[in-house]
Image 1 (cartoon, rainbow, N blue to C red):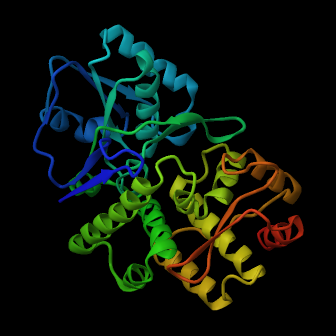
Image 2 (cartoon, rainbow, N blue to C red):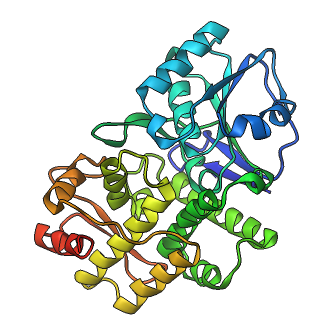
Length: 348
């Protein structure tokens, strides 16, 4: 299957997302595959056989969100300089969302920008992170605060890579699927409630549907000036959780699941969501063994951390909240008391 992304602002600019269609990646210049210590021994040798390039190199980085920083970017760039890659060269991100984000950012700044391709190996990266051109790294102040919008030239999503994915990583990817369904597609959400994603046919359907939703939103709003912000449902809370736990306790999808539960609680508190709907979404998250609780030690500190989020502007915090399944609200006018009331629920 091929899903085309054509950006509304420029009809001549876009790329394709291929699902289970990887036969060969033919490149004219040099190329480097960026991957991590977990993926490399499992899949790198077989994957490299599918790449035809003038010269092919590899860069293997450490695995984990805590290594998604400028130090790793510098290591990647130094390796590329050693390989003498030029402006006609291509980087290939072969891994999960962390690898994809860092590879895209390295491509954006190496010699002022070279091509890159996404070949995601995790469910989360396939359904979300690899599509849309968000690249970047974390720092002590927060998640993805250093980066760029830089679109790949193609995305190759192969479901076969998911067979070696640990259950926890798989479930973290499901969180992003649920996120998109709750925000944009009630019918899809209701299908997820009763479907077994351990079934290969169901999984492929969920991947394709999620990518179609993401591709449509990104095509309409490339740089998140409008509707693309809705894809951040759960993320305003999740990014604070990740920063407070030094990017080491939770996988990104797990933090998003907790963030969704927090966003739902806030939506209930201000009258956008019924309590039974919030419980229903929480049960769906729990069906896939995703966490929905996090103990906040310092409510004031947690609240202040919101203001470091990229989505906050003019001293206002932007929250993406559900109004039932398949509907949403973007709110930047919620009073501090209402937000802290929500945080109190998670401090007990």
